[in-house]
Length: 91
View 1 (tube, one colour):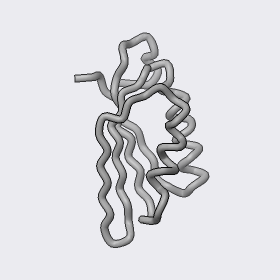
View 2 (cartoon, one colour):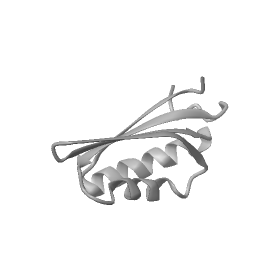
View 3 (cartoon, one colour):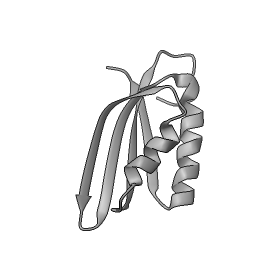
View 4 (cartoon, helix red, strand yellow):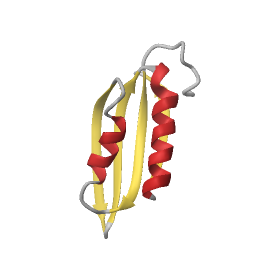
């Protein structure tokens, strides 16, 4: 599934963020997502040996997918965090 499929029904995206474990990382990510119409379905966080892996499963309107992805890429580049997204149909 691609974010270019904007004529489709709402679908889900898995957002994965990896970074140094420090206060406020999750809040920074949520601030990037705040302007968009989406729903957080599940959030998981793992912190081991000073590293953080944060996963968010969201549902979103396909029309917002490219803007969300662009903002997350810019956020990752600015912050130095590794950010990735994977899209799929709602199940």
